[in-house]
Image (cartoon, rainbow, N blue to C red):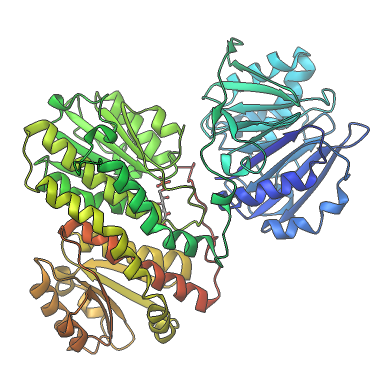
Length: 610
Ligand code: F6R
């Protein structure tokens, strides 16, 4: 949450920073700002409330020749979205951008105010600004002042700094939130995410917690908070500049929905070797002592959590492991039964979600082994893990997660299968059956994607609804939750997901002609029961959109509208196909309601606050 970016080199940096912030805008978009050093080494600053477009009109106020600067796009924590709370915050000698939360800012602020400091904003970041200023005045050595500052701050603080008295350098500090430094030719950059770097370089260095760096146009020096020099190599960034573009799609979300067949195809080629065998070596299990594992805890948030709810069916049925799927934000505040017989699977697209990170650390402190399934290399959560599987979906930029979800379901299924074979040597789903199911998934996803115009037409009938119910059974119950989550987060329609069998225990009271229901009814082992549930809804004047299996005329007959997709030959993996119409439906519902599909209100991707 919040994106920071900085540049030092020989090119005019105003537009470089602005365009980099555009790439980071998914991390927060309630205000933004840029600070540069002008020809006389004076800080020049512009800020605007709202999205980056609001800042664009002010860029002209910055000196066009400036070659050193920092920028920020904000998701408000302390202080409302307002120009005064937008970053950078600056005084004559320092401009600062910050991603994170300073937990002890109230105490620090009280102390600074007692010393005569007048605050202009309501942010925790301004405390860091004044504290650093005091440290610099007292210590008169930038490196030592930063170390002293870092030791006084509690919480998460990834900082970018320009200091007019050192006009050749930018400084970055990392604690908690991500920070990547990009190596260019006669220039260097930093950003919260490599997405902002790939237009300029393919080489990045990832700071670890407790480290800071001095970056000039031709040098990067890194130290830890004890002043020890850190020697770390730059690594190759695999994401291309093209992969962070919309490539002709109106929105990132639509592009990412359409990428799912190639994402799944890539995953299948990683998981299935040339001889048609499942390559369990690709699962990243080497660091896990499976003989110790007696129970599994999947920890995740939001859509990643829902993928874990689906995967539980696989961990229980294939690996026979008691499997707890838990909202990471709740897990560590109970007294969960987790010990050295537990395998914790942290599922996270970004690898930075604070709740998932903290609950994973907690489980680790109880002796659990940690496995991380993530999409972003070098993330904070992956660094906690004994086993790691990178999904390699390419950057997911739309705030609503789509392609990462389908990849999470697929990889967790493969993981359950791999654990089952390694632990017991046998598994209830034959390898050849799994391989043939996996190999057909991309084409089946393509067929589901081919229904886009039909789904749009259905959305046109329903987009003015105020409420929606999603129902399903088995692994399609969590998928109902996912359908409802997608709809509410981007179209702002109130939507709930329920297990179909639960309707009669309460929610059926909601049903009337104004409560449309999306009923997930594939031809699986629950099919007949699901059809009876649909009949119960239509008998009460509920309007039903059925999502079922190709050729299912019976479903078409009892529903008002129907979307039919190909069947997967393994029941749990059906959700990888069935989710596609749900994603497309929520996309068009949002589009028709005129909401901001890629950057829905109040949200941000990569949630680094608790
Ligand atoms: C919903 C969505 C969020 C994320 C959640 C976890 O569409 O994107 O619910 O799934 O914030 O994020 P990660 O997977 O990055 O840990």
